[in-house]
Image 1 (cartoon, rainbow, N blue to C red):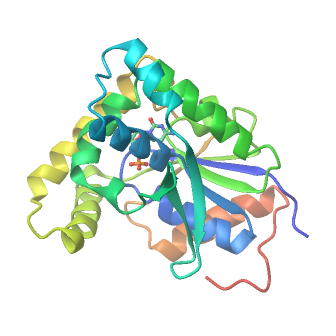
Image 2 (cartoon, rainbow, N blue to C red):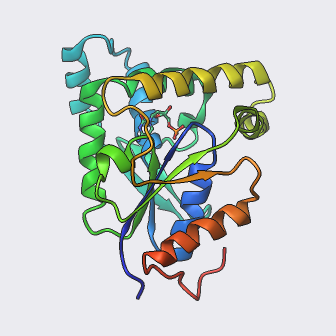
Length: 234
Ligand code: DC
């Protein structure tokens, strides 16, 4: 049995955090947690219920009605976001959500609500969690922290391809504007802004293949005495 630690992966929007986190979790036999999906699900609830998120009391009241959980989908072999008993994994990837999620996730009450649940999920360790503040705020004493970055042009192209498959009406300008706006809000907000933790290892994957970045990350895990599960292929 491999040692159980907490692995955090933070970084800019669309630099492949979730891809790497999922692959690492699979290789190591760890649980993958997508913290961004939680902020996206809260945003979906606010939009559907016309919550005025500039009003603190309205936000507090709305959060009381939100129950977030993850369910494992055997078919996709992935854990998916559930909002009040509804699987919202696919709806929350919409550009409409991406346009508002940075604003919603900059609200102190929203962060407090999500961070508490994320910390609870890490109580038994053996997790890979990706996001913006996981190594700085959620798990400041995580054993392995990775901070990911990539050139903006490469990030835009990757996200555009991903979104275009689902919605051929999306334009490259829309995707670029959205990434730049989210990067700005995420790194300039007052509460837990996106920052590289002092002890995080920088991973710039602009010129790396997915296999190369996975090898790099697994080597880091090995240096922490966490070995891949020999029965597990990626
Ligand atoms: O990882 P993602 O693109 O799905 O995240 C969506 C948004 O949620 C992101 O723009 C900022 C916010 N977020 C956050 O503030 N803190 C996190 N730990 C994860 C995401």
